[in-house]
Amino acid sequence: MDWDWISAASEFKNLGRAFSVVTVCEVRGSGPRELGAKMIVLTDGTIRGTIGGGNLEHQAIQKAVELLKMGLSERIRYPLGAKVGQCCGGSVDLLFESISTSPSLYIFGAGHVGQAVCEVMHGTGFQLHLIDEREEFVSTPGLPSTVTVHSCEWDSFVSEAEWDARLTYAVVMTHRHDLDEAIVGDLMRRPARYIGLIGSQAKWTRFQQRYESRGTTPAEMARVKCPIGLENYGKSPKAVAISLAAELLCISQGRETGTE
Image 1 (cartoon, rainbow, N blue to C red):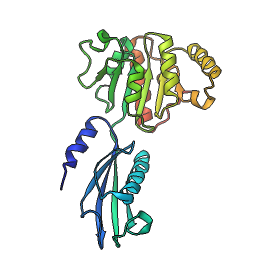
Image 2 (cartoon, rainbow, N blue to C red):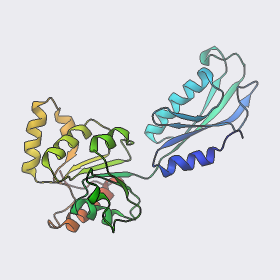
Image 3 (cartoon, rainbow, N blue to C red):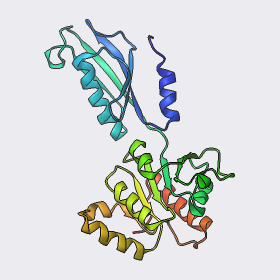
Image 4 (cartoon, rainbow, N blue to C red):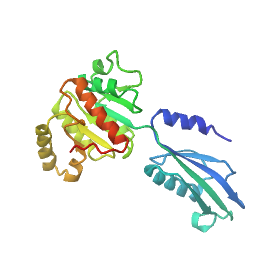
């Protein structure tokens, strides 16, 4: 093997990035690569390794991204003729293995509730990311060691984060309503399984009126959950965190929460 695909796979897994491992699992006649050659494909089409280049590899990348976004694995035979821009003859079977990572929870706002969410969600299988431009909040001692803190502006994080319609969860609970409004306005247009906004129904109604005046569609606004949580367990930071955790765990397990 001409490259360490296991280390590359471990790197992406540790970063919380989903990827597909494409393997040459059968070769009939002449082929561009040998049996067992591998390529890793990320959701944005970025690759590590090669299965031979050319149009065959281009088609394999497109198929890997397609299957990865659906969380599917498949074995596909590619004739090595004009259809894939090859003149080798024969055919190649490629195995596409979609490797889904654990879900990610992006917590915008490192105040009392945000830190309580980190404590309650620790150990649930979620990768936790706490985002706040206020250094003194994200560096608070006592946060679980598994929490990745991001001391940066929210838009900087959003532009670089991995967004996945199945695996990304986001909850907005900053120290300012204008920040909440700006962040949610951006997130509604990104793929995510859950977008939550802390606050009352009255707060959300005001936000919706402003979004509507800017052309936000009802379908986009319907993606936002406000108030957050499965049940009203109280208004203390820990109570809100427990309620939210119950809701997120139900959703991640494919169970309806029974709330609107």
